[in-house]
Length: 277
Image 1: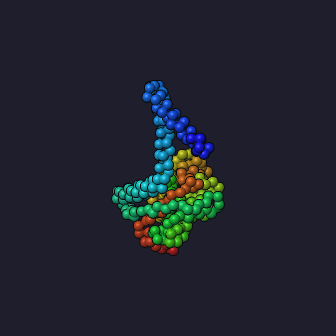
Image 2 (image 1 turned 90 degrees about the vertical axis):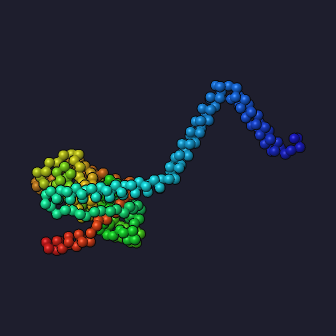
Image 3 (image 1 turned 180 degrees about the horizontal axis):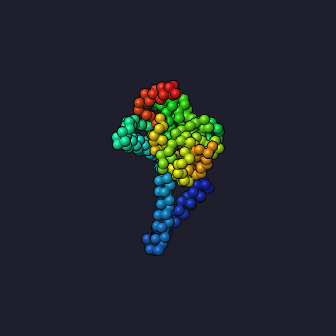
């Protein structure tokens, strides 16, 4: 061994030391229950730590698939809720001699690729467009409320005017009383909106829920939007309610574009009505 290079001798000595240590550990474990249990505890802890890291990594790599599955499930639930909502209205219309509501909604899932919350006129860009069935004037909703309205659509992307836009207006209602009014952003905080034109005789309390109205042309009714945090009397005739929105626009990632059947026919009739006024 004296004729071997110095580095090779060092490596051989190290390997011999490791081999002898391994044999000693095996003999110690086989002949001592206490040592065997202590070493196995350490090994099992190391294995558990490795399994946990592996599980976390697998979950991370499958995150996209999981999100897509959740989006699909959410889409199916929203479609069913919209269908049940219209069934409720049809039943009500049948008992009160109202015109039955037969419109139904479907949804197109989309990903938000650009968003803003710090301007007076905020917009979003989503990754679905004309090729996917998205057109201007379609509503856009998130998991916790309405998001905005499509203003322009290219083949594969669309521009959405956000609810957080001082020029945007929506019809919403005070859920407890069914009284509807105009919902708009307050222009300062991304979680605050105002519901105006609520008659003074309406009984309103802090914590009441505000939802989308059945009179909306682009959204299913009954979607929770937020809760009342305060109220003030405007011009002595109507309440203006401050609403804390459920939808967090700063964490908004996945949305659904709302498609309404017979949409063109409904808009044509609405336009004729406006021209007649």
